[in-house]
Image (cartoon, rainbow, N blue to C red; front, side, top):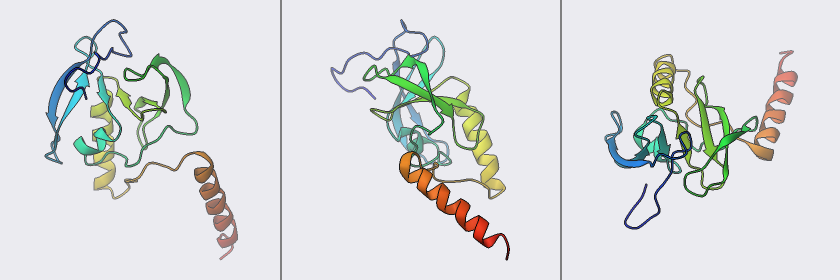
Amino acid sequence: MRRGDEPVLRCPACDDAELEPQRVRGKHTGREIELDRCPRCGGLWFDARELERVLDVAAKDLNVADDAKMSRRRCPVDEAWMFAFAYPQTWANVEMCRKCKGLWLDAEDLVEIEKVRRHLTRKDELDRYAPLTGLKGRIIRAINRSLEELMGGF
């Protein structure tokens, strides 16, 4: 989100297109925020945790996934390389900046994320929080596997 005399943000997908501020209100949250949208490709830039404020089924505390691959796109805020990964419990491929935690969604990704995660909510299968990443995530997964092995015989 840009305010005042902040620098112009460039679209990570189109390179030469400028992102334009766009005020949106979450359908289910009722919260209004200003996003940055590319007028050429329709992609959306969410500053850290903005998606959670607009979409009530967004994964909370999202970080770059452990299996993320370095993207060919740069962050429009700090120009760091972004990392691409599947958004939790969807097929939507998103890109996130490790530095500022901003999130880039191609035009169709927001609809995919909302539809799939809303469907999972109705089935009571939605994971509200994003999977833990890094060392903490690996430790938790190792503990869970060990517990499953120990309890498997009962």
